[in-house]
Image 1 (cartoon, one colour):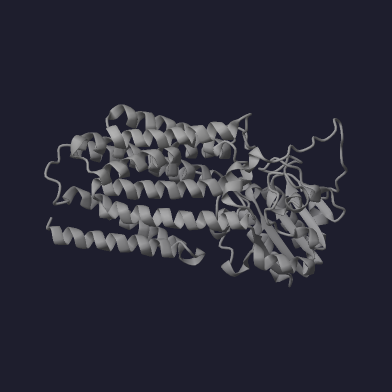
Image 2 (cartoon, helix red, strand yellow):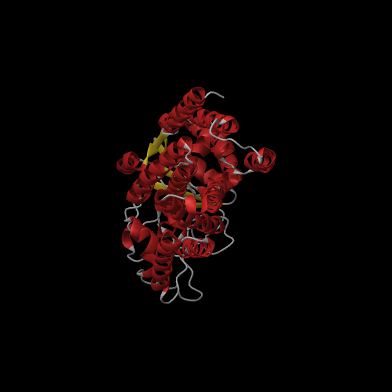
Length: 460
């Protein structure tokens, strides 16, 4: 392929990545943006085989085999994955990207040997350090999201000093690589970086995991950009920079939405005060209701706000909640959805879930806009959410979510919780709103409960 034509195609692909990112910034254009990005990535992969700068193509069959293996594994996994497991998949994909960038940088560094320039050595060290952190940290976020390990912050005596010492060791080893080169210091750097990635994420509580996923995504983007410098690939530099920049901006916005600094999100568990445990055998009364009770409350309401959470995704009840909202609208009830920026397990989780059910975008109202309307709301229907409406975020200093802005559903006339049980939310803390006199609990699977409410509402 002519070098000018190759460069022109590369430019078109880079523009497609920018257009994809722009499309992903709004729900209405997200699908189109995703398709543009996928097409661009496919073209970018294909044109590598025609790069005029590559003189020897001895590993073409191995590359094609690796791509085929990725397609065989990735396509079925992505198609079969449940919406509730999408954050875990994102975490794994993100980790694989960081790990792949680190491995490619190591291989290229060994290939260059003494011919590696100072810039290439620095880029390799950065890629191995940050890419390994992204890989191991993403694995821990996956384990937390999958609840294969505790979602609570994991701290141990002297933990902050161990983390600091590990980071110092990784930085020191980076200097060793730059000064002397060789395989051994590079592998030591990779090992220390992997360890630091684990220690970096362990102190993060469940409610803050989405922020860490976004931060690690930014790390992966930066490593891809750095590996692009090592490989002299403009496309990798462009793609990695876009991912790194957008991930950094998203992380900052999410930290602001949680009402805390990024440092406090990552290491606040070391300074948090332990929560007092409930006395053994202590029970608190709650008011539970039937689907008929809930239907009556909704039927005589003038304004209803639905607050979706992870439980809605678990029950796959998005279509049923849309049916309920449409039925209420036919009865003249004003309906809106209150969307918290970190509801679910990743940014935009609820928006994607409700988009599956074709919920009108104008009914999705962000937290800052919906909160002032709760005092004029007759009924709030909380479907599977807990932490994002928990008053402890305002009233209990030292708890894992303290300082996080919440949906002020407590100021509404009536609150209905659809829950499977009294089990705490992902942050692992109790919600006092469940025991409020204005709160009614409807226990059971969200989809089944909503179906019964819909049938009871039709009968009124």
